[in-house]
Image 1: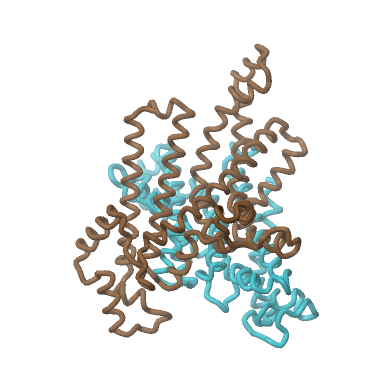
Image 2: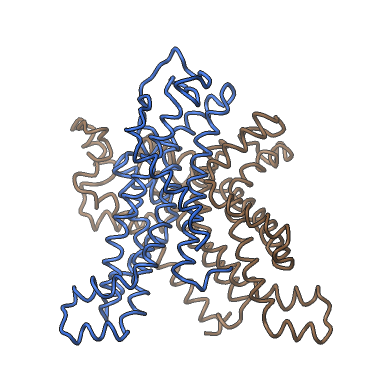
Length: 318
Length: 267
């Protein structure tokens, strides 16, 4: 990983973040008609002019578009995302409070998916065509087909409602009750991680089969290397690259999935204020949260690319 | 080829049920009958009634109609616009490809659900908003696939020959290039329909997609969550219908892809 390559990747990510911010800003103005009227209208009934004027003033819509854009970008650089239209609460405070909980969920789901999907894929590839391989492939197809919110709802129905061994949802701060915290984290993490686990299983299995078929593996075997060492040094390292690519590609789905999973399990992450804001058409709050998660998405992809380069020296050297 | 018929038949059956919904003599899916709310299965309503006394079987089948019409409408819209952009991008040189294909990649910077929620905030929930959002989301896929296929086809002899005969560009693109890249585009279409069904149900589940009381699988799951304790089966039916539909569509996509591109077969 050379410094130039890294600087280039970071610059690209920054430009993308700027484009994303611009699109989010413009979205309100791209819709035909007056933006303030648009946000206040419900089901074709035109809103009263006084509240439209008030909202227009609140959002600063009476200024020229370029001035608004400049103020928006300057605010972003200062970390100022504006205030909620509903209760004047600063958007940034809401995000600062909730983002760690969402990140924890994403992290737990990803960790779970990696620790199940990758070893299962390795095992299935080593015993190709065996019982485990065939069963796991069937389960994978099912896991990929079942939507996250369906998994979440069915997990609640099974473990909380029927068996009564898990809480149906909610949140407890880790400092207060670590055990309950982890218990509440388990089902949402499974719901979020299931798709990624399935994708990782498929990719690991295919990449392992490709890597196992290489001449250098045969050479390593022929010179009498221990099978465990061949697996780790020669096969796994080369098989991990496509797996990491898939991990990055799946992150968009995973980040969207957290919105649904947090809703199902009443996990008080970013999705609670987001959904409330979408319903109340609280545009600054929606923009703040959508921007935060989209930038997080860009950041994760940057990290994935760096991991990629660390594993495959050919990438960083180009 | 033998993997094509089972998922194909299942998808065809679901499509047929959805299309024939008005002809099946089902009870009105939105008529409420509070006196018989949460009633169990009986003759005339095989799967019982929901929290408003509406017939569950009828809502399942009409829900398929809602989901699939939104999914097909958005996939076809995305397909037509995306293919045109891809054709223009693949055929032109200079800034053409950048403007028509690479610029679409911006859409991929957003996690899909979040872009959808942003648009719902602006336009309000409803089937029209859903179709708009979903077609925007699947546009880059079509543009990319068409673009790369056009690049690989444009230098072929039969394209050169048509051009040498003096055919206008529009004729070459639509009559010579398009039929030859139809396979991958068709695969992309099936992928987009399956993905659209998932996203539509998810947004409806959040109460931000299809507007009640219209029947939708996502809305049914949302409604049945509240009565999970008394009537767990109400939750199971739409979950099963949704999962089965997507499973069949995914398997059909895989089989179609193998049929179009033999290299991926046998994996």
